[in-house]
Amino acid sequence: MAKRKKYKRKAGGSALNGLQEVFPKVMEIVDADEPLLTEVTNGDVRRGEQKDHRICPLAVSCKRTTHADGIWIGLSRAYVINGSTATRYRITQGTRGEIVSFDKGARFEVGFYMLSVPNKASGRGGRIPENRTGPKKKAHRQFRHWTTGVRTVLGKYIPPQVFK
Image (tube, rainbow, N blue to C red; front, side, top):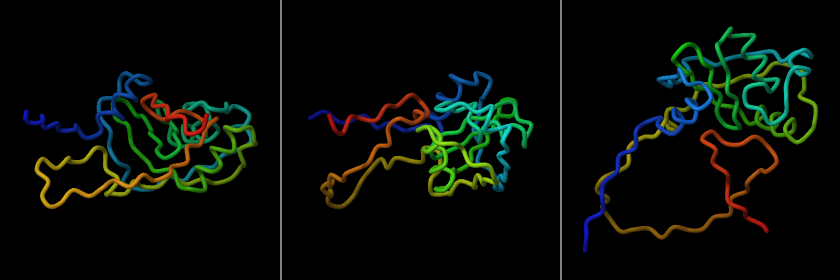
C-alpha cells in the first residue's frame, strides 16, 4: 500500500490568500494586541451596505476610528489593513448577531462595539500532526447550523446545502 503524502499547512495561508484577492498589497496577518472599541453612528449606518464586508456600518466605523487603509468584517473575524499588514480581531457574539440581523434586513443599532483580541488557541493554521499514535476515534456526525442570507466567508467558501 502506498504511503500518504504529509502535507504541512502554512499558518494564515488561506486567510491571507482571501485577503489578497480584495487587498492585493497585504503580505502578512498579525493578531491584535489589544481590543478595538469603536462607536457606530447614524452616519455610519446610512453609508453602510448589507452583505458587504468592506462597507457595512461596523467597517465604516472601524475605518473612521483607526484611519486604516481598509477593513474587512466577517462573521467571526475582522481584519484592519494598514499598508502591507492586516491585523486580525475576533468578532464577539453580540456583534455577530448585529451583523447577521443587518445582513437580513434589520437596522444596525447605533452604539459602541468591541472587536476582541483573538484567542491563542484559534491561531492561524496551526500544526498538523505528522504521526498519530493510539487508536483512531470514530468521527461522530454532528449537526451544524449554517446561517444563510448573510455575507460570505473569507476565501469564497460556500457551505453545503443542508436542506433542499
